[in-house]
Image (cartoon, rainbow, N blue to C red; front, top):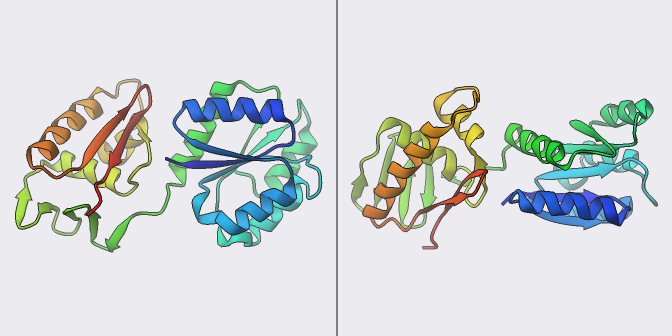
Length: 235
């Protein structure tokens, strides 16, 4: 699952953010000041998919932390940053956007809006792929050949329709990560969300049946009210 680092010194706000993000299926970690946030990011940047940050922090403030990250700290200058700003404080918003924040939510905030903004940022900046070569992805005992558009288990091919293959490729690019239905609709069908994602559910059901019948060991887990996660067996 996507991992979110919260840098917030107010335990009540940090706890609320963690509660809602965890409920939405994300892994969440909290640090209480900018120095610890920078240290954690420098040592584990590849594990962190998004940063939730406030500007007014003890020690190193959010402005300094954001600038250090955008300057290359942790070698992840492009990590998405969602900033929490004070109520109607335009200076905070301007400073945050100038330091490189991707979006902001004003306190007091609607937790559902915060989750939606986190989801949107992660959708625009997906995690690194799990490719074993530019043209193939290893899925336990199976191999997804992107160039030849074939799924094989050993010497046997699992026959997939066009959209079933595209759907598996989208999920396989981010194993263990929850992809919501809107994201899958956009990537596989190149369609904007219009309130109806039933086509995603239908294709997932068909793909799941084929993966089970072929004894691939690959599972597509349903994450209630959100979307789907691909679980790949170990070799």
